[in-house]
Image (cartoon, rainbow, N blue to C red; front, top):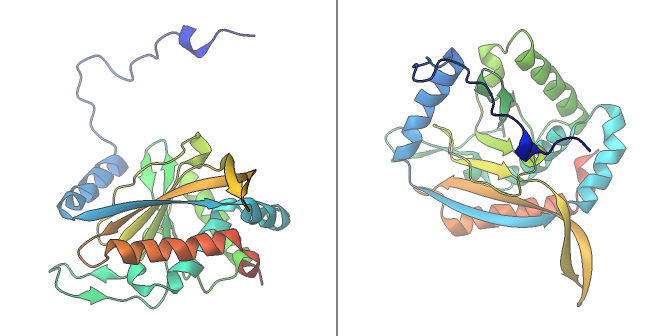
Length: 239
C-alpha cells in the first residue's frame, strides 16, 4: 500500500501568501446572487427514503442514456407537480405568490471556475429519456464551450446533489427568486426495521430549505412525503 492521506505533503498555494486573488466572473456572480438569500427566513427539514426501487429502475434505464441525475429530477418533478406552492415564487415585494405552470428544475453543477445551475424545463411533463438527453447536452455545454443564458434561466426549484462526494446530508442555500432547494445526500446500506424485524435497505437523506414566508413546515413536510412515495415506488416514472 502507498502512503496514507495523512502523510501527503501540503498543497501548494494557488497564489503568493497574503495576495488578494480576484474572484472569477462566475464566482463573483455566485457571491452576488447569494447575498439576498440572507434576508429570507427559511425552514429546513430532512427526510430519509429508501432508494432500492429507484436504483433498480436506474439499472434498467441507464443503458438508454438516462443518468441518475435525470431520473432523480424526474422523480422530484412529478412530486412537485402535486404541490404547486413548492415551485411558486414570492413577488419581490413579498406580498403575493406567483404560481408557475411548469416545473423547471435547476441542478447545481460544480465547475473549476465556480458553480452553475443548468435548468431542465418541464421536468414533470417530459419523459425521462428526453430528460436524459437534454441533461447530457447541458452538462457537455457547461464543461465545454459554455451554457447560453437560456440554459440556466427560468428555474423555479433547485436540486443540489453531493452524494457522489460521500456526503450523507447537508443544508443548501436558498437561491434568490426561488422558494425551495433540495439537498441530496448519498445512498448507503442502512439497518432498518422491516415488518417487526431487522433488515438492510439503501437509504438516502434529503434536506429541504424552503422560504418560510409562504411555505409552512407542514406544507414542506407533505411535499417530502410525496417525494418519498415516488422514490420508493418509481415504476410510473418510465412510460
